[in-house]
Amino acid sequence: MELKEALTKLAALQAKMSAYYHAMSLIHYDGATTAPKGTAQNRAQTLGILSEETYKLSTGEETVALLEYLDTHKDELDEKSARMVFLMLKSIREMQKIPMDEYIAYQQLLVEADDVWHTAKETSDFALFCPLLEKIFEFQKKMAAYCAPEMHPYNYCLNTYEDGLTMEKCDEFFAALRSRLVPLIKKIGEREQLSNACVKGDFDEREQEQFALELMKTMGIDLDHCGLGTTEHPFTTSLGSHHDVRITTNYSRDDLSSSMFSVIHEGGHALYDMGSADDLAYTVLDGGVSMGIHESQSRFYENLLGRSRAFVEHIFPKMCECFPEQMKGYTAEDVYRAINLVTPSLIRTEADEVTYCLHVMVRYELEKRVISGELAVKDLPSEWNRLYYEYLGVEVPNDREGVLQDSHWSGGGIGYFPSYALGSAYGAQLLRKMKETIDVDACLREGNFAPINEWNREHIWKFGALYKPADLLEMALGEKFDPFVYTDYLEKKYGELYEL
Image (cartoon, rainbow, N blue to C red; front, side, top):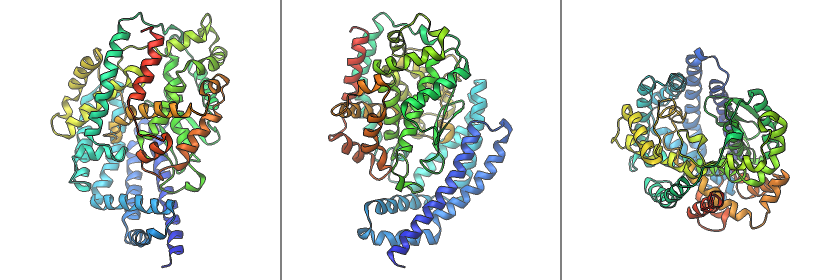
């Protein structure tokens, strides 16, 4: 086989795998949005068959021979082709270590778990979900033992979402945040609280949807290639390539800010996925490189931009247009202060910037202990409630607002949560770097996201998964990651807001 022929086969293989993932992603998206409640078994049946086909395609002799041939000629490959071969071989070698029947069974388990989690959350019944969650945690431990027996199983989980991340690095990172955030929260708690009355009330869901679409347009999201749906727990998914991205939200009639910031958050994910270079489409390099970098984009748009005074000044007239009665008598400054209210709360996705990372720390501690065998899955609700009181000083009234609030565990996302805190900190340092060449506040006041999006495209988005996350971040920043840039940002912003 000649190298040129091998590269042609590599492109065809990736296109075929992308088509399978497109179909599987559509089925998952349908299940989370519009599928009737009684159809989970049907989806599990189809996904079981598709999972078997992707497993065979990924680990088949022809595929392995092709990639190993290309690997022996890696010095002759361009940077992108070499990275594709590396990532695909890494994935295949892991996949080969997992028995096919167990892999298929796990995909079917996740479909059932997602369906049961929705019901369990609706009824606030952790006991209903517990047996499935036990199986998910057990499979994660088994997969770690198959694929990386030399690693602590939770390090394997963390590394799945952020290449190179370990418990040691997480502990150091969270300790750095805690050293600055806990005193800041205490100081804020001693001041008079801000009012969030202007975003509370009765907001029609159809009017919220129109406002959501306006937010997406303002952010520069191409609505011809990005759809908006509704689900219990908002998420973003790419269907086959960056040319077809879906975001979801959940409308709360009594709180405009809930959907507003989920749309901006998921919109950040969508912009990242859609910003991959066109020549990466239908390859393993298409889309984000890690969940930490992905969350740096979603949290960047949601908080660093979306909760800024400059952005609120721009979007306030549109809020008044969409919700004239609710906004009557309020100003842009009232909205700015309302959406930056700092108060310990129950729900992670609705938490303020300052207390948010404490929500992540709770999940990190619990996952680490379950994977290590120190905590039984059945005891998660009581430990969740205890840590929420210890970390945030809030009492959890039920499982729906407690241990069942997130969808991640039902989808097998063990080790995902630290990405949110890392992403928040990455984003603050990226904003500082961006401001060296762009007047970000002026852009936001004008509703002109083009220069901001172009900077992110040139420094982050267009590379897809070409580089390791730590290398990509350092390339964009021109310096090492420093978590204290994030705490400096929080202290400055909220020091001014609360007159500390």
